[in-house]
Amino acid sequence: MTHVVTEACIRCKYTDCVDVCPVDCFLEGPNFLTIDPDECIDCAVCIPECPVNAIYAEEDLPKDQLHMTAINAELVKSPNFKTITKRKEPLPDHEDWKDRTGKLSELQR
Image 1: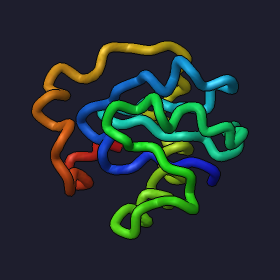
Image 2: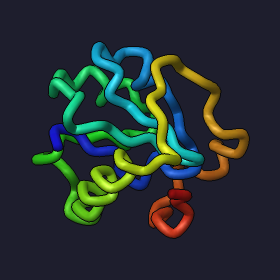
Image 3: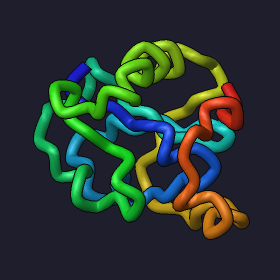
Image 4: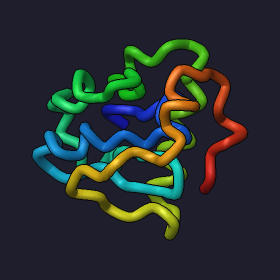
C-alpha cells in the first residue's frame, strides 16, 4: 500500500483529499475514508490537503498507526466502502472528534 489513512480520519471524514486525487483512489465508508492501494499512484498530493493530518506514505506511518495498513487494505474490499470522487461536507460532529486520538473503536466498517 502506498498511502494509508490513519485513525485521525475516523468520525471526521474530511474529503479535501478526494478533490486533489488524480486517480480517484479514495473509498468512503460510514465514518472513514480509505485508499485503494491498487489505484494509488503514490503522488502524495493528498497528504497536505488533509486538515487533520490523517494520510501518510506507508513508510512514514507513526508507530502507533502501523495497524492501519491492514485495516485500510481490509476496508477497500468491504461492500460498505464505495469510491468517492468529489468533496463532501465532513461529518456533522467532526469538530468534536478532529483532535481526539485513539478512535479505532469508533470505526464503522
